Structures are given as structure tokens and as C-alpha cells.
Length: 127
Image 1 (cartoon, helix red, strand yellow):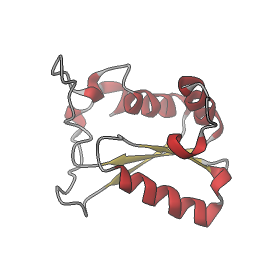
Image 2 (cartoon, one colour; image 1 turned 45 degrees about the vertical axis):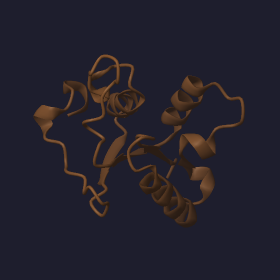
Image 3 (cartoon, helix red, strand yellow; image 1 turned 120 degrees about the horizontal axis):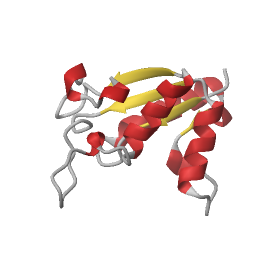
Image 4 (cartoon, helix red, strand yellow; image 1 turned 180 degrees about the vertical axis):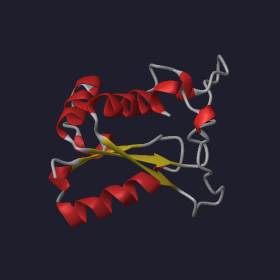
């Protein structure tokens, strides 16, 4: 295994991503798991670090919380997932481009119980 990249929304149940990171690191070693806030070097360039990590992993774990699909930009009202500049969107799209396995993990055991997104609710490049 080359590694796993944990994709998640900071504003949507980040504790789920932390728990997944912890368990994957325990099973496979921390050096094989990438989660931005713990894997990046202090002062590292965020976009470069993410791109480099996506180039060396063979699985992306998409952590889907209850607001993953519905979070919106406060000023424009646009759903974040619809923006090409949205990091969650970008990371998943890049994984698909590279042929990396994308494993969705639905956080159902949360107070709001996440629901799986329907394909017609997703941008075309990440359906």
C-alpha cells in the first residue's frame, strides 16, 4: 500500500476524519496516512502539499458528514461542493483522474446522521 489520503470537510464532523486517521495509522503506520492538519510540515505550502500527497497514495477516503453536500458559501449561497476551487471537490476529482480508489465513508452515527449523496446532487466530475 502506498498510502491513504483522508478527504473531509473541516466544518462537517471533523472528529470522524480524526478517528479514521487514528485507526488507519494504527493499522498501517502514520507514514502511510495523509490528513492535512497532521501530515503537513509546519509552514508547508498547502496546495503543493495536498497535490504531492495525492500523487503518492492509492486510496482516497472521502469522509461524508451530515453537511458535506449542503454547506454553502456565506456570501454567494453557492454550495461548496459545486465549486471547482473547493478542496474536497478538487481532491476527489484528482483521485478519479489518477485512477485512485475512492472509498466514501458515511458518518451515520452522528447526531444529524449523514445521508449518502445521490449522483444527481454531485458535480459531474465526482459522481
